[in-house]
Image 1 (tube, one colour):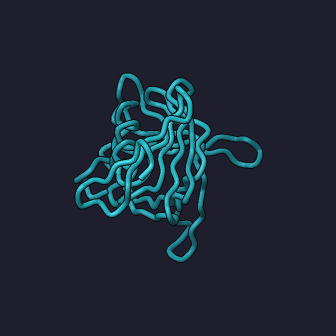
Image 2: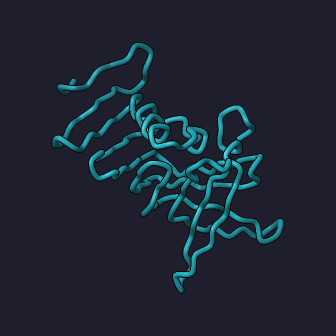
Length: 163
């Protein structure tokens, strides 16, 4: 096994945290998901916003706030309380700071135009108010660069809330 890699008892995949340079840390295998959730919670986001079972790779360049995630397949998750379906692509990335994610790529919200037609809308920013309002906001832009914001109660994205 490569230097920096370890095998957790009972884990099906080897894990590795590799420092590519002083600022960039890439975590693979069974340790990637906990590191991803830890980062999002550190910056104020609820872990339930990311309902993944497993991710292949999580990378983070802390001094720039740049992160990325790779997983085997797209994931579609319904947040019951929010009445929204979010599609998480195989590769996602963004830039994070306290209570804010920008340059978001790889996430789409599926909005029902009617019971048979859905429109997948990529969102580009996610943020929480400071001081807290109890809402999480999602911003998307159309081709004319007009912004649309959808605000949802944050409890819709906490574990155990039916998310």
